[in-house]
Image (cartoon, rainbow over the protein chains, first blue to last red):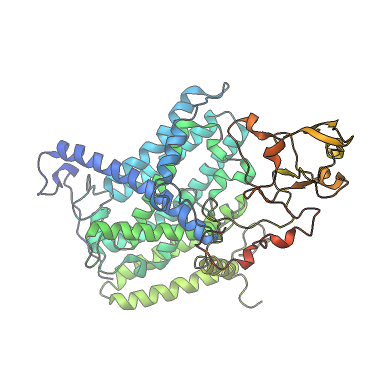
Length: 373
Length: 168
């Protein structure tokens, strides 16, 4: 693959302001923060509606369709309902931690969007270490969840929180390793550069990377089948069992913002981000985000929940070796065969990827050889 | 062994749910669409037939919770007649024992109507002429199979063909 190496760019973030923006950096910051938060909340509302409608169709139901046209305002009605509920704090709760937890969970997710390019130049700060920033901040959410579990002083909460931490630690490693493949191909950690480098979407060049990244981030945002953090049938609602009212709303928003973030990141890293023919770039990003989210909903409507030992085994025995091999192959190709035609690489990587996944599925025994997948 | 253990169970499941995506939803949009209940349903009202009632109070005695309040008296011709019959539908459990207890067999019925809600509890107490048969309050076939011929056939989900149109 023709690695689009741009070299090290030492300029600071506020020097990389797009030239056609009026005002100084702080004006840009103010306007774009407002735009971003509005974008996140609007997308979250759309995603909630989209998920409920789609999962309804998967279960041959209609989904919410009473509030507004096609039930579009259902999420808004839910928000109003949640916010008007009584905010209960348990007597034995660790009050400070309990109060801080929703914020610690929500704020990092919102902050990550600062480096996600909505289209060329439409970005709050085009950090040179964008990916690093994303990975660093998105892990903080787990601390918020653990604080919630600890602060609630409830056995189910703490079980859920500990599961979340175990899950995050396990899945962060293959997740990061799979992103490194993309970074190697691009030669830059900046998300805008990664999008610009995608002459063909990286999902074709990095099928294993996409596979590992997608599953790892599913685990990171606690979606099905990795939702054993908030498994209703086992630990009732996990970490948010004691939360109600606006605190619960914050957790809910954080969870869905993470889903939006995952969709945006997958679209940016592997599906070519904003680039696409005919339609405006921003719309392309949205379409790709919704496509990724539809895949998530499809998975949610199909797969049952992992058992905890299966979940750990899946990360360490299945995803981690795959991610390492992917990293090795990508680096070998970049070092020894940088001038290879992209389509040969596409064919090769798909062949290698499918073989590897088949071989690993064969030898992989989740949960002490009791259950096969 | 074949292709077990290659993750094809997941693929099968995903294909199955994908197929379901293109099926018609089986949801009944209740206030707009209504399914017909069973013709022998024990509906949520009791219908009293003034003409055939012999004022024996068997229904009131049969009622396990005593929601039927019936007072009778001897008329000029020494026959019993009903002075007042009051049924509290807030208490009634629609068990149908009054229907089965009726000696003449056609003086008290359960209704075919199943949508019965009021804003005030007092409105659930009906008496005398309010208990009579009316267009909106039809007799159910419960314990009276001869009545059920007149009622529409029950809508089963397998029979639903005219989706999108209100059921009446």
